[in-house]
Length: 498
Image (tube, rainbow, N blue to C red; front, side, top):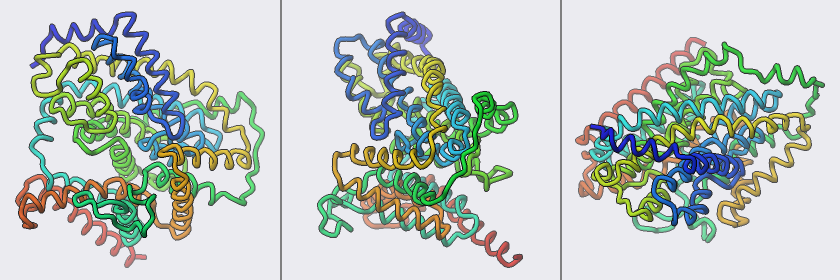
């Protein structure tokens, strides 16, 4: 199955001094870009792509993979320090990372994010080469109704797990997220919906303003007016509080393992992204935890669950691109351009035509993960002391950072107003104890759900039976129905017992 000669050429090409230097530079640049709200590793790749024009294929991929790996981790830094994710996939990291920061354990949270990111990326990169052909064939077998079933399953999974107290509140959150996701043009006909004549809503709501306002802005609003008593902590005590104990390492291992598995599978399926895998793994780890109420309050396993899953998608996301020519994400689309520039055509024959480059890419993923450990420790060495800044100074800085990040998405003031609107929505949901996680995931997947639903009906001539006759769709829809029935019965029984 594997061409050992091509594999050796790819490995030797990546460990040359020039390629190693490019990978170190790429990891550093990607981490810095990822740590700036509004910028991402994908943006850094797009900016530096012209520099690869005069490079050979393997050194060019070394630089781009370094930026890719660094950017995937970098978003967790502002998510933990300010509650403002540097990238959408880091949003789940802020659920427990920012509360730990406020407890004076920012260093521990940053270290956990770094180690979990590296572990998830490294192990996923190893398994990616093995599972490349199998998952690519599976993705090729799936069509519109199957993807619709997967999206329904994902939404139901989040709604039922995240709403143990009331499935009705979970349903409300799902409908709010879907309503927000449907704003803008119809994916099939292009007809405008729910824009109320506002031209700024014609292209829909951007993820960053919605996400940051919902989770970060609402948190700042909830803390407004609360006077925090700051305790004086010595540097020695601070360092002691930010050490990761053996018990905490053991607590994180299951979440890292599940994150690697979930991230690898989600990453290999076109259309699903790192934010989805992070949310799914976080919800799964919370479900099986002995203390689920601690999640969202500063649980270290919540950080490892989110970071291992979103970084584990890095390698598998390239699987459909390399073997089918289908970019599974925006960053993968940029890689498609980079490969085309080098004269490499992704597809089933890529191993025959450019096997050394393909294997080199996956060796680069593993090498860059090791380099990220070194670069990441340097970055967080000083960043962890930001927790000493008083909250009355830090909160206004966070709001300004949120507004700057929202504005930088498309350089429109309307994005800032969307951010402020979802700050209020998030705050009201907190007051009414409606979970925000189902809203986020349904907003993320709403467009994909609708477009695949409509495509399936077009394929079947309006026959809804296509969702039952398609095996994958029928399986996921049946499992989703079972989860809904189980959750409703469980909550009804508990309510009667009380």
